[in-house]
Length: 166
Image (cartoon, rainbow, N blue to C red; front, side, top):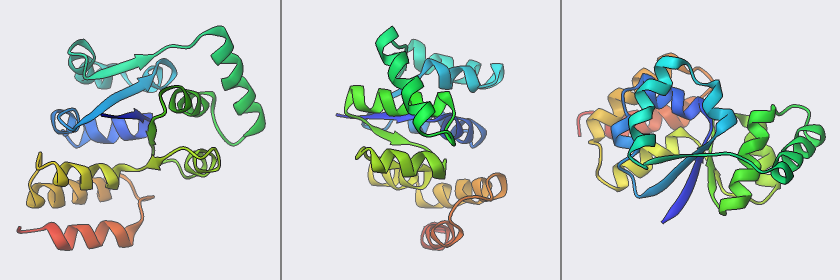
């Protein structure tokens, strides 16, 4: 089973879209980091806590040596936050793919030769694993489009057109 490390923006969008049950039914070992977890609001944590309690979302903490690696990444890549850099170290440690919507972080992760995907990939995966219908996916993508203007509009529109009313 592939390991997927989630950034805060992905978890926030999934909670806002009311897709947590769907996300955590995917055939992926889901993780995040304690620093990313700290970025979530109390309400968001409350909605995700049952998945943590059910061992469907693991929260990684770091050793002193790993914190040193995180600090080193954050000094080398000043455009990234400490929280962003935890995803790189966790991704390396678990040989995981990283799920993020942050363009700067994606660029660094790709340069580090780690696999990286965004929320649209998660929607594709949800459909591939038949845990969501095409029409519901299209509806949720319309909601996502309204919340997140930074998504690639052409990819978003293509999926909505392909999936609506199917």
